[in-house]
Length: 547
Image 1 (cartoon, rainbow, N blue to C red):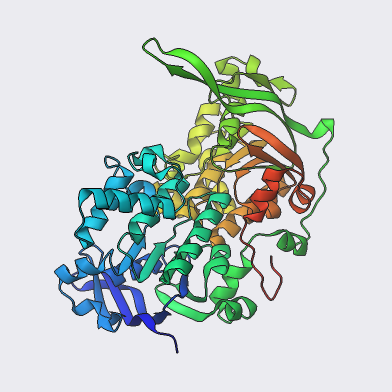
Image 2: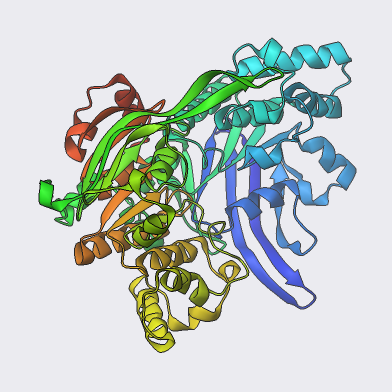
């Protein structure tokens, strides 16, 4: 029988003040064996992160442990004084937080931040700390570690920042590593690298991992056992094989059913052919270039250019979804903003229904905004927090002089909200009163308000749970079918592309390296980069052959 590293029994966590306490984790129990990867799977708000923070006794004063115990090597952590808990954190239990950008100190170098943890748990000289920090950076796959140890967080990419977080978490040689959504903000290829790194380090060090995620694909790749959480409770706990072959709980089944895929699309009979002829053409982009000058020296002379978008050519037709896929930094968003004339382009042609957008003056371009809209990646930052939803949706209508009288605009706005699955009562609330999925629906309603023919969707589902993502994708498909809207869909999520796209273009370092029908590109890629991108996607094998 394997040794239990961690035992959680009847854990209940409450939030609130005084007598107004609400359970946010409800009587959960599980154990983690030595060398095991145990996954807590569930959507945002299910209690996953609170469970992890409870293990470490790291939470605000408003959150309290009401009942239960957490034992590390049979020792109840809830009975330890704070000074002994400080010795546990980092040494016996390491933690990788979800967002490395906010977890790393921007004014300390990578080496200084690792050394901070080392000095906390070991009596080491400055030189020993430096040498050990270099070893750790090298162990997590950061090249030229001896040089980069002196660099600051902003000098590293998102994937490299997460590697630094892993190095910090490993500095104390923990028996248990808690990884809280460590790949959420990463591209699929970087995600694959981080997951493979964790597996490698786990194998080398024999440590256990508590892995927290809402990504079912990631869970299938990492887990030995999985506990599915909903509303603070564990609704199903099985081995990975058992869970994916025979999910019994209704909520678990719902999560699996929400996973987008080509197979799901075929089951829904949604593989329609698009009329890609001249009379259906909405957008033609030819040889689009967006270059940024590199300036150095006292007089800021231009010594070169960053080719953010480099000779991109693409066409989009009415009722068609063209997906632009690629890693962060490949030029996807820059291309979208260039098409909308939200930034200066270097050269190229952008034609919307035979109108050359480059030749339009500001006033003419403003009039055309009603035809071309955008849904941004982050719905919260794209809405004015001081404006009510009614005003946010009607802002574009007023600017374009459409919608008729105030009464007519209000009636139209209510209709829009109902189309995106919201209620009339939501009109007089503020953005912060809504969930992420609801905010994205509001942004879609705002885009639809001016009756566009083309919508640029910039990662509209990247931060959403799988069930909310499914709702948004279904909504977009329904609206497309009803109004023949064309979507330029920017994403790095291949599963989403499989489900929603008709045509796909793969971008790498500012160039389109491959494009064509979605089935042709995703099932039979020719370009090496496309092959690597697709091979990095976690694949799930369900009893229903969903993916």
